[in-house]
Length: 168
Image 1 (cartoon, helix red, strand yellow):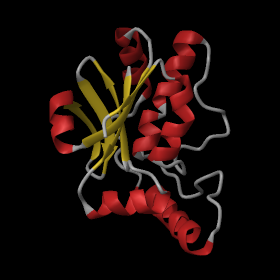
Image 2 (tube, helix red, strand yellow):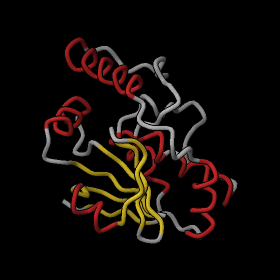
Image 3 (cartoon, rainbow, N blue to C red):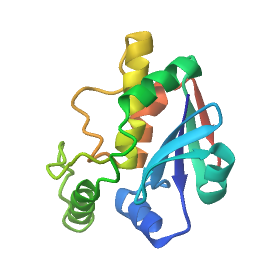
Image 4 (tube, rainbow, N blue to C red):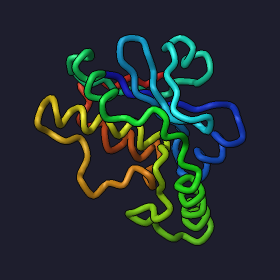
């Protein structure tokens, strides 16, 4: 299982990077050459080469698990028709603005979270996969992925990865 952390040469991506102080603005999860991620167009499955063409992969984390079993757990858990969580993103953007300009810390919960997914929420299913397969969680139960930026998710998961790939 590989988690991808990416950036794009677009205004939205640059704004997320600037607001969060990171070099990434998006994340995705991959198995067997397929990549799954939540975008403004909904939840997508793409071939890895198509994904790499559209997104600049800045960092990746590998986890030693049986990809077949991990993909079965993922596809059973994820709601492929859930769509993008625009309200959660609006709250995240508001909190990023307050953090950047007023020095206010990010809250621990996204109170505007709905039934859709932000990219971090979709990638967060890696935590459920690892817990089901190894009995160990990657993230503390208190982590709300609807308020966690891609760079912060990377920082939380990096120490637990079996392989860290930096693609600067």
